Image 1 (cartoon, rainbow, N blue to C red):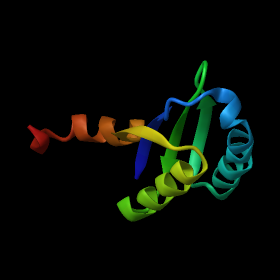
Image 2: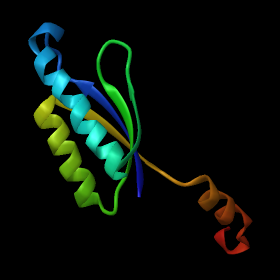
Image 3: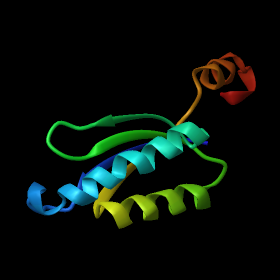
Length: 96
């Protein structure tokens, strides 16, 4: 299950959370290495955009809680589909 997650950190002075922000990068690298995340991009200013590839909503929930423990944030969550899946769906006449 693919999810695009966009974080918007809590409004604090960047200098107050600098040490916590440094802990985020090893945490997300572990998720990239294990395949739980496919990509990550820092947002200009603060925040990040991540594509997670998880087996359940519970796994996503756990990851977002871990993330929020490092850097309190609000998350925009968008379910995604693989390009091949949507092409198959569009080619299937029974989907109408």
